[in-house]
Amino acid sequence: MKKLTLIPLVLLLLATTACSGTKETGSQTAAKGDIQTGTWSEDGTVFTNEWSGIKFTLPDGYVAASEEELAEMSGASQETVAEGSNDLAASVDMARTAYDFVVQPSDGTGLPYMMLVYEDRGLSVAMNSIDENGYIDDVILTELKAAEAQGMVFSEIERTTATVAGAKWTCGKYSINDGAGFQEYYLRKVGSVMYGLSITYYQDTADAAATLLSAITAIE
Image (cartoon, rainbow, N blue to C red):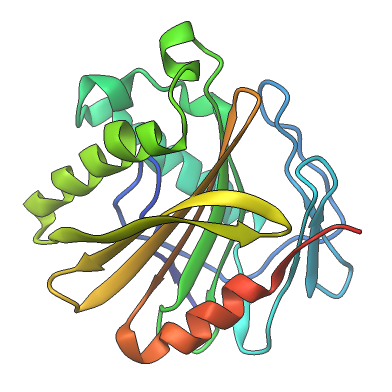
């Protein structure tokens, strides 16, 4: 079976892990707190999450991570935090972070790569007081700065707002290594939960990345 290389570059993980490229369908998983992750259709092409109101139709030529792979990623996140990149990141209880879906090309090219994660920020008043822009400044940029030790340099292109699945999200767009790659972070805070959507791509896969993003819609 083809190996799927996951490249999670959002929230608290800047690492690479290998997994199998298959997914379970028709299951619902409850994370810690009030977060609920979604379900794939029986044919594995449509993802829905009634809790977040998000629907995603998997385009041809892409594969989604299985529940086991997402659990593996969560474990890798915990190890990254345990190694201690900074006090703020280490203060986040990773048991309150849930990966909803991760997708990338099935041909092994790796990009564009997109993932949706939820993080419960209601662990403390200080954490919950941070809005979307504050999260970019205090969490994401701190992790991107730490990535410089791995030879990656991120430069902010712009910070704006965008409509995804019928809702307004704060968006930070970044260049990786002077345009060798690009990464976009979409953040939306609902109650104490921060929704984090990221998409990573090369310049020549920018159109494919836009197609992936447009495949996310609101549940009607």
